[in-house]
Amino acid sequence: MKFLNKILRRKEEREVSKQEKTEVRSEKQAEYDKPQLAKVPGRIVIDAIRAPHLTEKTAALASLGKFVFTVTPSANKILVRQAVEGRYGVKVKAVHLVKTSGKERKRGRQVGWKAGIKKAVVTLEKGQTIELQ
Image 1 (cartoon, helix red, strand yellow):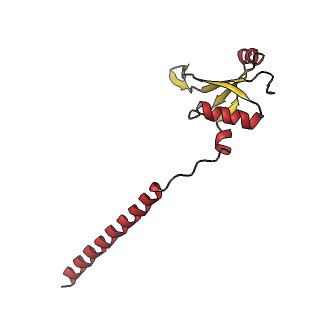
Image 2 (cartoon, one colour):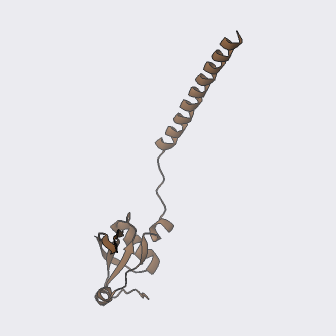
Image 3 (tube, rainbow, N blue to C red):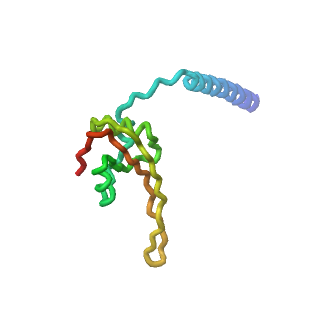
């Protein structure tokens, strides 16, 4: 009889754990069903810009009011615009995004890849400028 009692006890424990799991799932589902609050533009927006992309070509573009930045791969035009306006306090006229592919690098027989980057060409309104080092 002890053997049967053990089996029945285990079966009851399994049923209780199943009920607990369904309750936890329903609580999690309720959290997902809640309306999401709009994300406040702050650190996330400013982190969209990684660094200014400084080359001879971008220095020439700066004289035309266009500045080039390396941005995160998930950044879009709206995030880049908000990040530049927030960080540098300027008015942005247009944003163009460019995705560069990675390049193959060889070192003897070893073959590797250099990571590609995403760049943003930001055009400022007339009279606006950014001081980049």
